[in-house]
Length: 91
Ligand SMILES: [Zn+2]
Image (cartoon, rainbow, N blue to C red):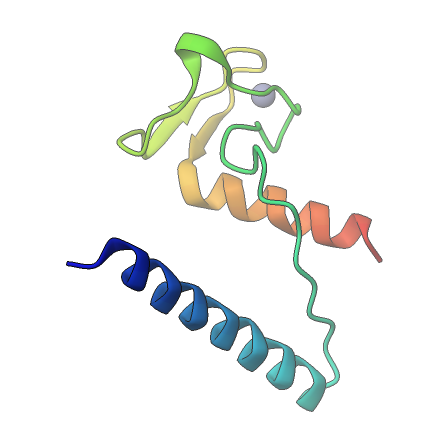
């Protein structure tokens, strides 16, 4: 009911999750990185085309086809590929 309170609680939850992931990564000798999430959903992981304007994907768009290269995407799989590429670019 209290939007500001709910916001700070969810913020604490997120920080706790990031802390746990960092701890686990160290424990298993893995690298934990955070990346800028901007356009990770809207970018075609195959050709780099960014969906903008009236083509911009909404939360309801679970599957889509890139208008530039014609490749078919499952929304979250495409975003995961973009996030991985951003992380690997930081190494
Ligand atoms: Zn494409």
